[in-house]
Length: 353
Image (cartoon, rainbow, N blue to C red; front, side, top):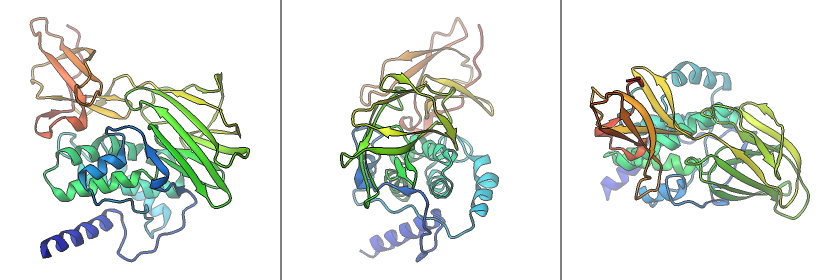
């Protein structure tokens, strides 16, 4: 019993440290309000269902408010720009992609979440997405450290509050996930959001936004334009291409939303190489893909689609060799599905035979 109590105390203290809080600190009022976790329903049953995945790791986990450090905003931004952002890797951790990144991803998550609530800049949601599609699920699946798994689960369930958010002008859509939300804020806000998508595996997003009280809904919609989108996506409302302004990394649209209005976005989630130190990393949308135990002599040449994973249904890709005498194939799978002990994230540069 004493050991259990000690572990829980250590867990709470570490969580407070990683959030940048001291015990007993008061949260500062935020101009942007997260949406209560119980107002959002995740409709998938895979790694994109952050609530279900967290509970599978820790059945006692529950969402906690995103806390705002009691430090000046310019100090927080300076720390991000000088200490965090330069070291940030593609899965939300720091440095080499091969080791488990749980503790670093948790620290990144809470720092970025607090900064986004204070600034509304999409660059911090981009950092959150790296952790949620990389370092956090990887730690939950593979870390032998119970504390690391628990902290990752807490961060992931806290993220369910940030899928959508509101301010005095309207609604933020931060993540493209198969979800339904009913957002009520006193007498001023009553919005239903129905998002249908297979993201991050396929790039089509369909969104319906309407009033929850059958009144006319006039509001500003902010749709995040992800860092990994290699081109500005075309947006359609009721089948008509619609222009939009870009502010702080969001597509901004203000209009009167009718009950059956449908908004469509299409992102390119095909694999593309990203140059890093020593080679290339493949990323499909926000998901980094890795190989298992690649030979040092292997020179990749052609990337092609492979059969989806039999258990998860997630897309996989195969690499063929540039050497005509080498008939071996290297399979690429999502980062968090590959055992860290055999994970190869950085691949040699493509060559021509």
